[in-house]
Image (spheres, rainbow, N blue to C red):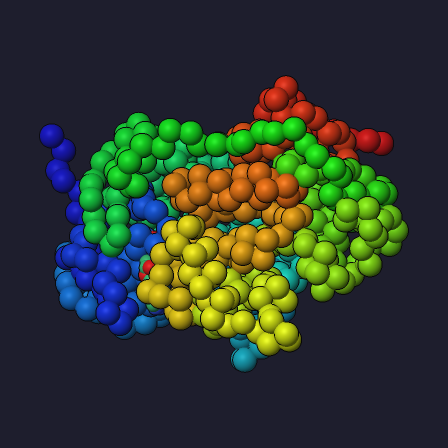
Length: 498
Ligand SMILES: Nc1ncnc2c1ncn2[C@@H]1O[C@H](COP(=O)(O)OP(=O)(O)OP(=O)(O)O)[C@@H](O)[C@H]1O
Ligand SMILES: [Mg+2]
């Protein structure tokens, strides 16, 4: 038997409440050099809250933080950094107006005599980018990068601090499989060098790949500690307390009339001559690699961004270009990729955020029917199992996955007949995913049409009726989901049309 490894960081019997709600109840977790501790649990189980206590953001109400075997205080983030604890948070923390290099070196910018030294700044940033295999210019503004690339910059920043504890809160949620694999090999490397890590992900297949030990949380309580190679169904059972029979419960039905018709949609440099139809009762998956132009197309259809030429028709009627208001009033709804910047009013309550899209339909004689709206918001929150203290809680305080459910809930409540979903289950736990799929079924069962952008191939194959595939801004094919395979979709996704 080898010596038990000493943990570098331990949360010892910690408890944390917000107001009357206890979100972490007497939990202990050890983080050991050269090992990856996985935190597993449903949306709102308390994973992010735990890591915030490891990094000086939240402080336990009782229990203690132990570093190198000694009780320690982490009054703030700086104190955690001094201890060598680096965190990649679930929501990105980059400054969009600064360059990639400045973001990577934020707070550690090399300077002499009060002047920033650009050359060493660039060099260190380049080294950090190279390490994770990210090929972007260090001078580029972060705000101009895709969300996947922003996530990679965030990771590069954490890695460049030479941390001895690295905490990764859903780092792969916005990454493609290839980018995730790259991250995992960096993690292997850090492991070999004795870095202790904490890893959170809703992709259960990643757990045996990178993890060693798993702590399962349910409603703020640690319900189990198991090895990372525990079979998936067992992990699911521990985490949600039941089996999940059918991960993709798609109801397929005979499609009806054409609800959404996109013809020759073009925006120079972004997408070119995109045409497709979606019928009542149908889910059209929109697949492709990150950067293929899928989100851009969907945003243009919704009116959130302009386009140069082409037409969008809803029920045969032309939608004016660039008018979200017109789209909404014709029953089009959109769940954006970036819920934080595009989807939610974070300071607003859950009730207001869910109710927001329905202001029109719930007003009576020009007056907003607040009571009715609240009632319906409550129903949606209940159906989606949105975990919250109450309808008046600020949406910004919900866990990441629950925020996602709130954005979706809004459009379901609005009774959208054409729903545009961009990565609808990103950051959503396995149980809640099924609930979101049921909602998609509800929309199509009641005669709606859905366009679903998704980078998860099993989800696209499992939930679509047809799959449109994009590569480099163009449509490379539309296939029936029944006969498609991951390989056939990928082949179209990497196809070049030149
Ligand atoms: N500042 C806060 N004020 C009030 N409640 C909060 C606050 N921060 C977190 N909570 C609540 O604590 C609970 C746990 O949230 P946490 O973010 O830790 O969940 P999570 O396990 O990370 O979920 P997800 O998988 O969705 O990211 C949630 O119910 C959340 O609403
Ligand atoms: Mg979280």
